[in-house]
Image 1 (cartoon, rainbow, N blue to C red):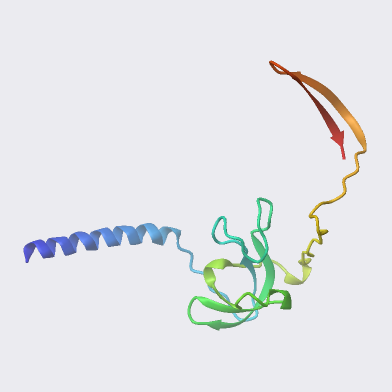
Image 2: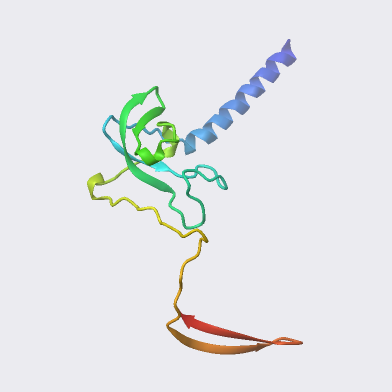
Length: 146
C-alpha cells in the first residue's frame, strides 16, 4: 500500500508540473456576439485548408462575424457562400480578434489562373550578362528586368 501511495504522489507531482508548463502558454480568449474575428487558414503545417497553401499564403482570412456562442470554447461564424463546405462552428483556438474597424478591411479577391496555370511575362531589358566557368563547361547567365 505504501508503494501505491508513493507512486500516486509521484504521478500527482508530475501532472502538476506538466500543467504549470501548459498554463504558461495558454491564452483565455473570449468573444462576444457580433464581434469580428479572423479565421486561421492552416492550423497544422503541411495541411491545406480553404484552398490556401504555400509560403506566402495568408495565415488568417476574414473578417467574419460571430453569430452566437455555442458552449464554452465554440463559436458559430457567419461565413460567406463560397465557404459553404466549411462547418460554421469553430473552436476558439483558430480565431483571432479583429482590432480596428472591420468595415475598412478590403476583401481579398480570388486570383483567376488560366488552365495551364501559367502567366505571361514580358522581358523589358537585359541588365547584366555573365559567363561562369566550371571545370568542363561554361554556363552563361543573364539578368533580366521583367
